[in-house]
Length: 476
Image (cartoon, rainbow, N blue to C red; front, top):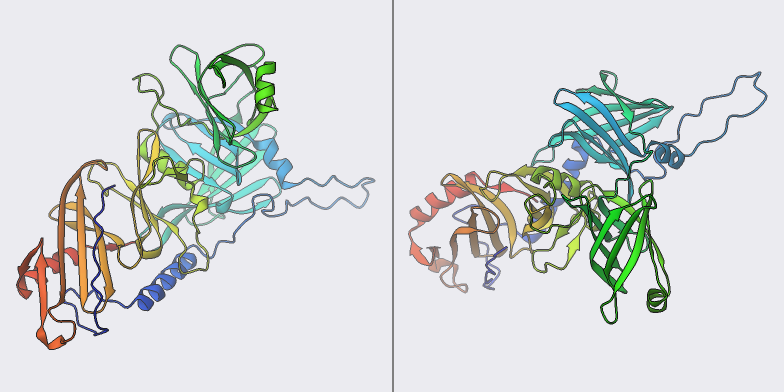
């Protein structure tokens, strides 16, 4: 991301009516942000924040009076553990897939109608309740920039044969049968490929990708110890056997990866490794079927679509790369999401912000929040707000979308910087305009208007502003 850092002129506290009608005091901005956050919560019917391991107590039923024994108490964790897995069903697009998987924050539920399209990708935050053998999901099908949302209502009814899925457009009561999904058998099937997190630090630490020749590329990041980044493995009856370059003289180490559900156990063999690390066995848990590993070959791995990557970020399954430091990443849970505070974030709309034909994701938040782009099997921070001197928004101008940074932090001064992209890595055009008092000590001296460094008349400036701000979309 390229960004122009705009100078802020500090003058006397004189209130001047803006030609663009955009001047706001910081306190007013903060009040509006608070109101906006409240509207988002109201529009979502004040969905209760749910702890993943304490959603709604399962309806255990009451034993008949003549029953001699009480029914055993079943915890939600036991229910989720029994449901984890992959389920197949027939869809209009051919073969559909329903997946329930463990995440660092509970459990995720994904429904793909085909390999490239989905019904929903969600987690416990969308679960309204669990009653008997039914899970009730109120899923935001679409979220608008003003915080309003259109919901779909899903009921997952599970038993030993699989899961029946029901769907309603207006309520759970209106839900009709959608499909029956059968759980995929695990016998003899090893699904190593994906991204796994370290139990200790809740960060991605194991990446496994299957190559076109049937071998696997393996990256193991042992926190503050060692990075095995060139592992090559193959499936055997014992598990996924691999070799990688070890510490010291650069000799090879050998290891074995085994799976128990979504939990991967890595054992590294040899006394030399044990002397170096003091430990030979490590455990990780799978959070995504999409590994964050790419070697550049055309057939190396099926690329996840931009829409799917953004949804995986929303679900907390993958991280995003920081715009100022490519070695730094963050998860959506690292942000202050949907809290009562004025500086909280919320998931906004998807819109093509860089004019490349694919949507980017808006995370509404303080001073305009964050814009995220997805490419090369990764999510990247594309644009970010940085306080009152760099308020982020976007607008439509001359047939394209422009990113806009606004500085209205001082009375008597406004400055705007706009960027048009043709793909997130290609800055195609820039534009600057603004207004300021000629003399900050004398308001009667008038106001100077500029456009790309040249002074213009009030009429020219007002005409420009009317086009730009009429189409501006605020993402506070």
